[in-house]
Length: 269
Image (cartoon, rainbow, N blue to C red; front, side, top):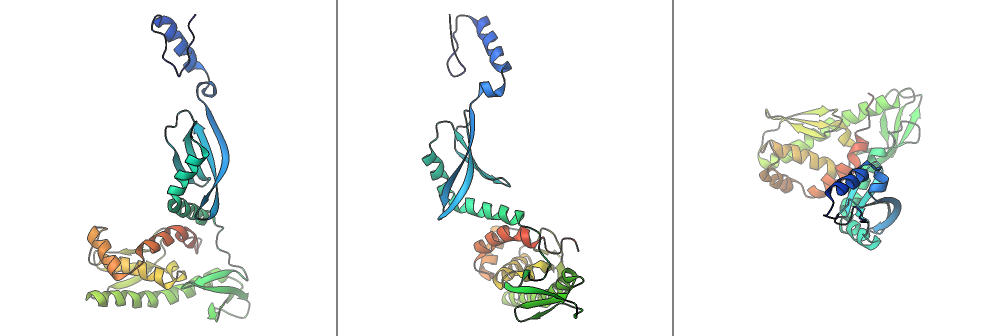
């Protein structure tokens, strides 16, 4: 009597029996045909404890990493050791941290427009104070005073009013450095883009950027001004952008991490 399993070579003497056994194997539920185990675990990334789920499967040949709304998920062969998994996570530590921060920002609750909420203007924190005796939003030191009836509308109106002249000034600064004529600058309320540059020489910049630190605003402005010279994302474009603004990599990472939350401001207005 011959005995074999899916991991060994089937006997060659009885092809009919082999086909019957193979058909029986394929008819079995997946649970009996493949081994797969899922368990929680943790690793240290840049000094911080990171929770993850490891899925061990007989189908996996390599250790893989995936990050989504559920967090860090690791796919691994059945025989992979915990140390090997942690080494792969550590090797990709910066990427793991960046992606986890991005998803954390996406999961962040929507902005609060209630008394005591903290908003930011050019990176500086302001405590929102909702009162009855004002008709418009104003900045008083580290306090942002707004009418109690509709503080969101009032604050957004103020931010837009402050954003445009600041953007115009920064665009002019970078254009002067390149000897370019000053383009028309308008505000944008785009839900996923910070700026755009039209082939006719018009620049649109998102009003929500006024909440960012000045260095981040400058990066987006420099990015769009560079498009006045190179209307693409070629190597020449990035070279010019880096000449105009230092810290491009940091700015790109910051926008990926914090951008989704900032885009939530004014999403219903």
